Image (tube, rainbow, N blue to C red):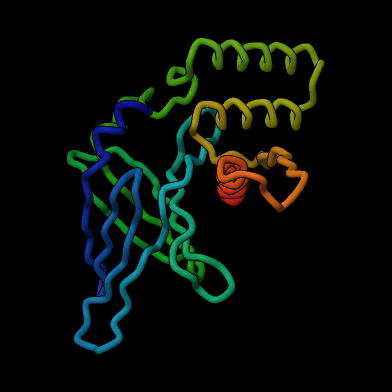
Length: 196
């Protein structure tokens, strides 16, 4: 939701036991061990990825791709709740390497502040309306409906895309070049291919 972007560029700290957590909405969350040990932990618990959306409501922010933790990366679910001021209220680690954070802010106190539908463009709202109608008329299954909603949320930028981008095929006929210009063209194409 656009009104929550007022939090972007700000960071909020919370100290729990011997750890200091710093949450920077739409950026990342870090953890710093408050210790005099020479190897005190300091690292990233997650980088902003996407919203968790349930029942037409922004439920939580997901911060993923944090520092390595065994065979996976650390990740954090940030739950937004109503509060008198913007602050971190609670941090826990319900399972190893997966953190749960409660962030209070007055920006979510209005009962409609976390609804997804009003934040969508007219085009995406129309797509959602059509999906609702198709589900109502039994033209699509519940799974098909949920897939359409996921596509809508991805198009809106609320969810990270799960679609695999196809690499365009660029063919070169020969690795030998008859001119400097041809060499530069092939070199440029190879650089582009490497970035895709």
